[in-house]
Amino acid sequence: MAPQGWGDADRTLVHVQEIDDAPLAPLTTFRLGGPAARLVTATTDAEVVAAVRAADGTRTPLLVIGGGSNLVIGDRGFDGTALRIATTGFTLDGTRLELAAGENWSEAVARTVEAGLAGVECLAGIPGSAGATPIQNVGAYGQEVCDTITEVVAYDRTRGETVTLSAAECAFSYRDSLFKHQPERYVVLRVRFDLEDAGGLSAPVKYPETARALGVEAGDRVPAAQVRETVLRLRAGKGMVLDPADHDTWSAGSFFHNPVLGDEAYAAFLARAQDRLGPDAAPPAYPAGEGRTKTSAAWLIDKAGFAKGYGEGPARISTKHTLALTNRGGATTEDLLALAREVVAGVHAAFGVTLVNEPVTVGVSI
Image (tube, rainbow, N blue to C red; front, side, top):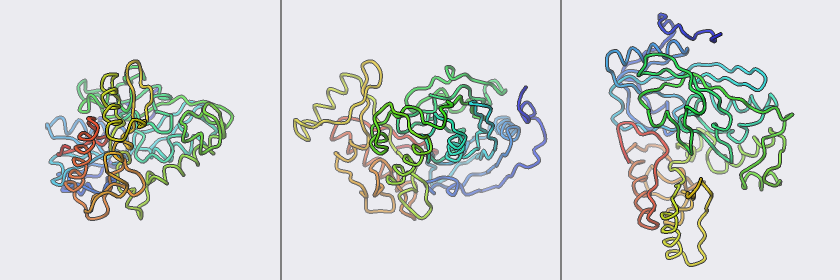
């Protein structure tokens, strides 16, 4: 039986909020960007679908906003309808979890840990909404949401109907998914997970940094609450936990993907690194499938000469982590993009690797 509110997208919108010439910067963690011609805030799935249909029916450009933690909006803003998804819903049935797209992700992780379930505890502290997690296949400290997602309920703008996609149909890969490849087609409404009842213990700890911080070996299980607290501490030390008073968190978290290179490209990169840094240089390297190696964007940025705190203007690299670009207050989006372009060019000149930005850009490009 469908949850209450599904299948009734044609209802009159009673609670939806609409604002013209609405500021968008306060809805992003960067606190950057110009206004939207129109901002609609939807609090139910029905309102989300109706707002999308209304925009599509008039061929009005549509920008979907969740937690705003992975979004770079141009200074001119968005000449269309910005749809802020503010739906709520946390349903737990045994190990099966369903989250409305507008649910705060970090708070949802805390609640699963409190319930004694494992599978997303290493994803604690990641800002944003639950609906954004399958789009990016959000991951950190050895876990990705694709490890536990079973289904995603979305509105299919091409078919004009709500659909349920299995995890396989979502085509998850490293920081990637079907939704990322077809950004204009799907609007996520709900995400379903199957977690693990491990008696309050975590999933096996995979990430070396997490294992070291916990004082355990990779593969060990420890209390999930302890893992969550440790991850929050690690993230806070890198400026990756939102704090309005800390400009290091006025960011999108990791601004660049960790590059994944084929064998030939990795060999060329390694030769460049050793030529620049000496024959003993050993860049981070992680297997990423047959014939592919993942390396560290943070390492590349640092070794290319961009240290923590780099920059002289209002947009600078975080003082806590080289992978985060930040608004120190008073920055414009163009300030941020100028810094991003400088970093991309510097890394390419040094190592022949082109960094790719993680955040979605609106009205601008890097």
